[in-house]
Image (tube, rainbow, N blue to C red; front, top):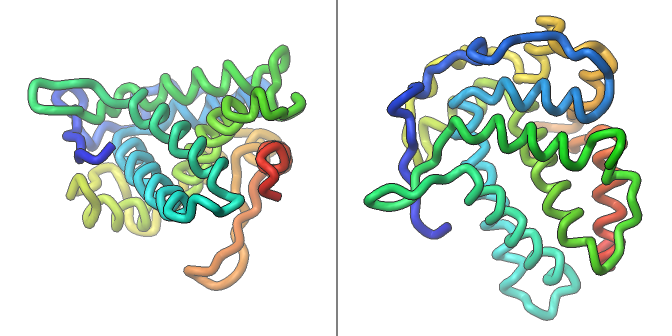
Length: 231
């Protein structure tokens, strides 16, 4: 993760519209369906921003790891493992190094939702133990990372992409444009109930905002943190 990957855009281009995925309304209001509905619309600007977000989270956890005696270290160590899995899952190896393949981003997150949020295998309700806490952390981190991206404003995504590691002109984004989840809600891809399962509520001044995640995601994180003794 120390090398900056190139971006694989030869086939689709960074300006590919989210309409390349069928904008079919959600058929149920489960967390799985809501997350999949959003994941399918992670067009290239969102994929690039997501990778930038992963890099920031990696740096944050590396700072925690600088203090090995910190009670947060075990969770930070496994967080780095989880973030590396997510990152490597959307990279492909080229002749001159890794490439970020934006085409891999929607399928990766739809797979995560189907694997961990399905009604028959719903991980947020499962017991989190020392033996399974690492996988719980990785699954939670994947959904959490996607939520952050899907709830970010288009202005912020454009700003980051113009000044980030890829230095890209974020085609397909609009000044003052809504977040991805807000747009999908307005377009009725997400019902009111589904919107509540993927939306993040913000409060407080800019730069020091408090984020309120959907209850299932917050309680899941609390259980994982408790398993690490990091409440």
